[in-house]
Image 1 (cartoon, rainbow, N blue to C red):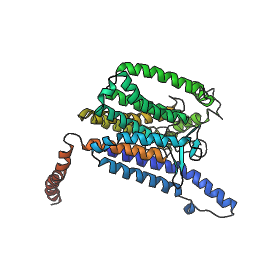
Image 2: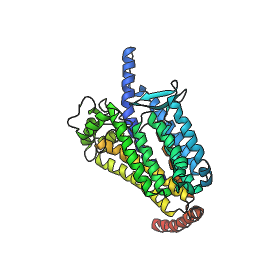
Image 3: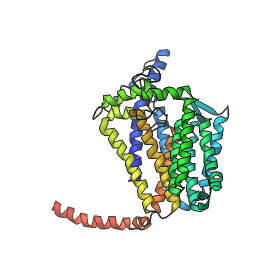
Image 4: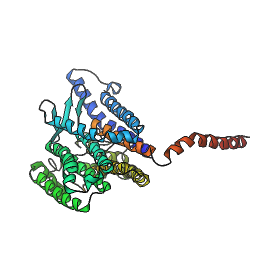
Length: 400
C-alpha cells in the first residue's frame, strides 16, 4: 500500500507538472518563432522540460528501490554520516559563487551540469535518521540536560540554523515538526517540549517581525479581502480562484485557466490549486486520502516494530511527508499564511522529489524487516500457484 500510494502520487504529480509547464514552454517556443520569423506547429513544441522531470523521477525511483533493499543495520550505521553530509552541503549555500536565491530565500546551490539543488531537503532525512540513532544507540543522551543540549540539540540546531540562515522559514517549520516528532517518539521528557515550544514560538515571531515580506504575508492571511490583489494578495487570491473554478469534478486535465500566467508558482508551491481546478474536489479528496494512506502505513510500521530506531525514524519521516503535505494544502486553501513549501511527490523540483522518494525507500526497507514479512515474501509464490491451481479448473468448467 505504501508503494502503491507513492506511485499514484508520482503519476498525479507528473501529469500536473506537465500540464503547468507545457504552457510556459509553448509560450517560449512561440516567442522564439516570432522573433526568428519561423512557423511553429503543435508537433514542434519542446518537451525537454518534461524529459528532465521524467529523468529526475526515474532517478528517485531507482534510489528508492536501492534503499528499500538495504538492511536496517546498514541504514542505521549511515545515520550520523547522513546528518554530517547534509550540514556540509547546507554550508555551500553561503558560498557566493555557488549559492542561488529565489522566492525570498537563498537555500539553493548551483552545480555545473546539474542545475540547482536544495541541501535543506537532505537535512530533513538527516535529522530523522540521527535522532533515531541516538534513541537506539545512545538512549542515555536523552536522560540528562547536558547530554540533550550537547549531543542532540546542538547538531540538530546547527542544521536547522544553517537553513534559517538562508532565509527559508517554510523549510524551518517542517524541520521543526520533524525534530519534534522524532524526539517525541524517542521518549524525550515533556518538559523539553514545553520549553522548546515556547522558545520556537518566540523565534518564529521574531523571524516574522524582522522581515517586511513575512509581515505582509501574515496580514494578507489575516485579512485576505484587504490585501492588495495585485501584490501580496495576488497568489493566494488566484489559488482560491482555481479551487473555486474546479467545483466538484474539475474542468478537465490540462484545461486549467489559472496556470495561463495568472497563478505564480503553479508547478511547485501552488500545484494543489491547479490540481483542484483540473480534477475538482473529488481529485483533491483522493489526493488527501493517498497521503492519509501513507500516514497509516507509517503508523502500522511503528506499531508492529520492536526496534526503537525504526519507530523514531518512521515517525520523523511520516511527519515530514504528511505534515508538509498538510502545510502546503493549508496554505493553498487559506488556513495558513504563505510559507513556500512544495507538495511532496507532486510539486516540481528535483531535490524535494528525490529525497522524498529516498525517505520512502527507507520506510520500505523497514517494512521488509517487519515481523513475519520475510515469511510472507517466501510463501507468496506458493500461494499464487495454489490460487491459480484452484482458478484454472473453474475457468475450464465455465468454458465447457
